[in-house]
Image (cartoon, rainbow, N blue to C red):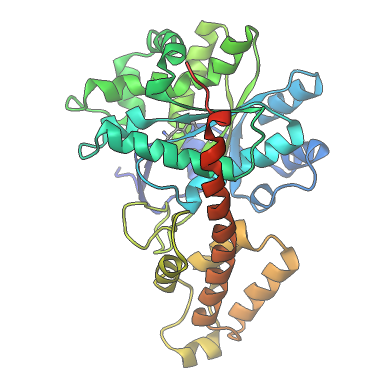
Amino acid sequence: MPEDFIVTPWEVRGEVDYDKLIEKFGTQKVTDDLLKHIEKHASPLHVMLRRGLFYSHRDMNWILEQHEKGNTFYLYTGRGPSGHTTIGHLVPWILCKWLQDNFKNKFYFQLTEDEKFMFDESKTLEDTKKYAYENALDVIALGFDPSLTNIFLDTEYIHHLYPIAIKVAKRVTFSTVRAVFGFTQSNNIGSIFYTSIQAAPAFLGSVLEGKNIPCLIPCGIDQDPHFRIARDAAEHLGYYKPALLHNKLLPSLTGSDKMSASIPGSSIFTTDSEDDIKKSVQNAFTGGRVSIEEQKKLGGDPDICSVYKYYLYLFIPDDKELQDRYEECRSGNIMCGECKQHLISLVWGFLKDHQEKREKARDVLEDFMLRD
Ligand code: TRP
């Protein structure tokens, strides 16, 4: 039977059914009980948790229990530097910042310039390295505590990563990576080894401190296959299995499910000018009708609207304000043009401030870098 959608770390195709993905991947739903448990330690809950953008997990209850016993977890996430950062990329990083504020965790951030070099025929290592440093500025701009935060590039921190990576690699067969990632005979051999490099930071915190420390990885659900492999290897290595908290992929403004950084105008980059944002948002896919008259009569459909999803998950955290907008749309009182203008002003309000912090981050970059 042909699959109706595909989600791997390198490809998202079709209309993603997120509940089905939980079954396919064998993860757990984020339940109200779990949210209450998190809220005991971190209140108020972050809007991305409250509104279900983070919707799936592995071993999150165990992570909280360990924290309650005094064995607090560290955080790990990362970024494949294929270009500038989009708002979609920020999602797990923003959650990490919120977790760090509440739980005081150490935070490891991996930049995989090796991955993007290996998987993209057209990119040089210089290109991906350059973007790695650009992306690091976005991480720092979110306000992480430098004394708890460690950012590294794979090729520059390899002395520490390699011994862990080969211990993972020894436990992963070619037939496993072929099945998990869909590799064929024509994939280059670097790609086949790569998952062991992405697994390494899931144990790095324990290696550096010389004791077993739980690790929590907030990430897009598309990255889960790497960590299924890491979890299997953990037992052999004698470390805890890393726990995960997965977000849905922020839809692109053009309507398809994952924000694609490669289709111009479908994503908002953190480096965009106000004009760039206007262009992207003005072309956005909405729940509007074919004509103004019809929309006044029938109302719009916020449930399918990409502009509304940006409000829901990021830009309108206030419940009452969001509800008002929803109803104004449904009742045909507000048209898409006006609504897009509102999103433009919210996004630009956020990015203007982010871009200032991003520039300041250049001066403090070294305070955050983990060096071999
Ligand atoms: N493979 C990820 C990407 O393409 C980058 C990455 C490395 C990552 N380590 C991670 C993502 C840990 C999430 C969690 O963006």
